[in-house]
Image (cartoon, rainbow, N blue to C red; front, side, top):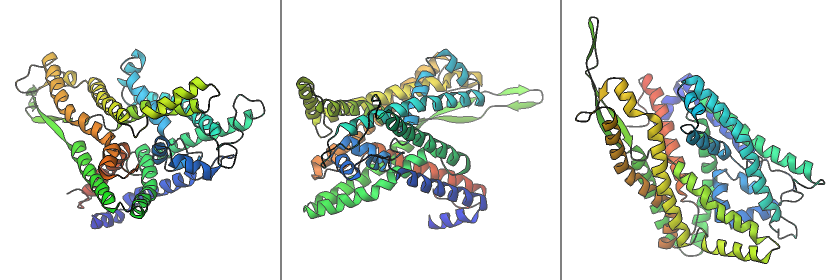
Amino acid sequence: MLQAVVNAFKVPDLRKRILFTLAMLIVFRVIASIPVPGVDRQALQDFVKNNELLGMLNLFSGSGLMNFSIAALGVYPYITASIIMQLMTPVIPQLNELSNEGASGRQKINQYTHWLTVPLAFLQGYGQAVLFSRQQSPTGGTLLEGFGLFDSDTFLPSLALLVSMTAGTMLLVWIGELITENGIGNGVSIIIFGGIVAGLPGAFSGLVTGNSVSGNVMGTLLFILIALITIVGIVLINEGQRRIPVHYAKRVRGNRQYGGTTTFIPLKVNSAGMIPLIFAVSIMVFPGLMAQFMSASSNESLRNFGGILARYLSPTTFQYNLLYFLLVVGFTYFYTMVIFQQQKIPENLQRQGAFIPGVRPGKNTAMYLQKVLNRITIVGALFLGVAAILPFIASRITGVNTLLLSATSLLIVVGVAIDTMRQLEAQLMMRNYEGFIR
């Protein structure tokens, strides 16, 4: 692998792409360290460390949430907008027509996605600002001072704060698109990857030093072993696929013969990727945020109800993780079916004169592919469900409580690493170099 890295840097254009990607990641880290004004940083860091939900969001933002920087939202408003547009495309006829227009239609949908990202980022920033402005600081004030969008005295500073956070998100999206165009890999995925990796050294240090001091050395080693096994499982599930053979009928045009070849359709075990986890996390975070808001209410009934939510739907409870598991499994099936319907594989096969041996074209092909996809998705859905609640399971086995084993973060890191290595492999193979993957 080291020799492959050396070979990659020997190619001028490939070296330029790698260096450009690294430079953009450095810019991202600088942006993530610029805090907004009026924040009690030390108190905020302690608050985020002691809150598992916020700790998970902080890991994805590359510690931007802990600093409450202008990049505290990361690129997740853009991801949310992308998911919404993807789900709405088969439902709204105008979007469906655009998706069938090729590159120009996809460019228009991408433009709509950018427009939708702006209000989503503004609303998410407002929710975080309200939450921090209501949390008491050990110094006597609140974690975020002077925030009040509907107060005439604080309107302009509050609006400037939210505009800065929204602009930070859009800046990261723009950097991601620059990486896609001029660097290596998918830019938005690389940005998320960089944020997660940047937070891992601190998390690993806290895991080792904290549990070594407490005497739970064996638990720490067992926890690391579980993490390594999980990474191997993620690689196997992400790469696992069922190959459906497809035969192209022979066609004669003039004096030339076309077709007569056999290929395959790769149906992946995990076609949905990390999207089900994002869906489930978004839903599971909501009760925790509601409990945080209600705990600061002046109404006793709301405070009591918030206490019940916090007690029974905490990430450390069995019922929370059971619901999380069921949501991940359900969303995996849902999103896999949405993707399968959008690909229109049976229609494309029939249009190209291709067929699956032993299966009639058209409706029978669709039913056969749906049946196979349902079977292999069981494995992918159950794996994602177990991976989602792995921190809960690992903490019960080892006695170590940490966010280091977040399933979504591991999926992103492993998935982006494999995709980036493949792109480098393709570039090196074109130049007759032996690449990363053997």
